[in-house]
Image: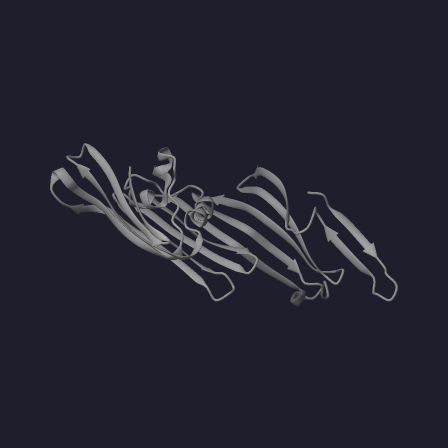
Length: 267
């Protein structure tokens, strides 16, 4: 994070100026990672847009979270932008937000959810999730949508419910779920120790609590299920107990496009 200002006047051209905080392109971030009472400041950022050697937009960005009475709200790239007009006119200012996540743990009810927007060139992606637990019951839903700006879109969705569904003591069903991906990749962890935090397993595990930091989970969803044209997948899974002594989660995912891949998983 290295702020700099340059003012230039070339013959026959208007006075131009640039404002940066590092090598282009921005935004440029300054890591804070400090707790200020109920407010946690992760990092603050700065961005500028130049047109013909003149700054046309200046933005201030904020990443952090606020915690009050068991409720936590986190924001990703909360942005206040000046578009180069009259600085005293409200029309010259705009506010944008790339991500919002909320988690709560109150009176035996645990909730976590949020929505994240990411933009990379002409590609815009949205990822969302909702997880809730109350006693032995739970609901988990997560999904995403991407448009690459060239008329190609992708989509994925997975949902699961938890509870005492029923069955014999040797195989008592405690959860069921399934989903699909259209023009989406399917990345499975190579490290088996990370299976417990994989979205499919976490959604079906009746003992799993909603993530304490749902914003981090939203970023992981984007990495697990990337935009990939021509690739499709289906997944289904169950959770169960055996004589109340063994708890198990089993998931099977089938991915096809450039070939066929079957991915079993369990926890």
